[in-house]
Length: 271
Ligand SMILES: [Zn+2]
Picture 1 (spheres, rainbow, N blue to C red):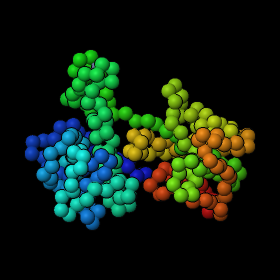
Picture 2: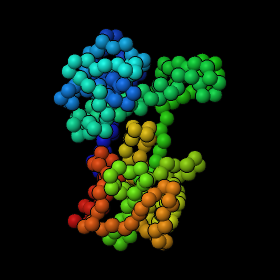
Picture 3: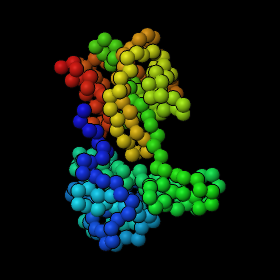
Picture 4: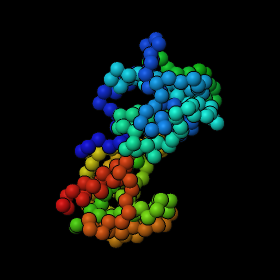
């Protein structure tokens, strides 16, 4: 399988502490918007900002990588502008795009763990691992991910696609849902398909995974086959669901997503 967007670049090495006077690429965020050159190809190599937070990420080849967050209302310097990551897909090169996704998640983690979730005291960054530690009770806060499954269900030559109430345009996609505590990924696939569309599935197979920085998630894709039941949607989760063949697919999610790769795998098997 081709690596999906946001996968760690091959030459990337994670590290916590930059060498003295390290220079390199800066992934600077204003909330969830990245500072990008006006031609949308580059991130800055220097800056004059005062940051709310700065994180060293490691190296990409010989380049040092930094993530940082500016104060609200900060203006972009001449030749640069703020841009949402989604709109930079396939414009910014894959390696920078992946580092930008990682930066966004780590900045969010650092911002939301300045105080201990147990006792409310302030936290500090641990020296030897990417983790914030409470100065009073010692509680540790690692960067958190919320795993979610995506599932492509086949019934003969058709696949099940569904529409959530908040999907843009007329998109249909594969079913997806967050993993519950105490549940295996396969159990999550079986539960989500039963809850959302009222069908039972068999032959659940791992397909691939994708970091998804917009919801601090890791998407884990599966394929499976229909076993029994007819579509009965959960109206709180979905507004429509149906079986589609390769020749009459509805509008699909963008290529950035694992959902699209799952659907592509079905199309390739049909051609
Ligand atoms: Zn504490």
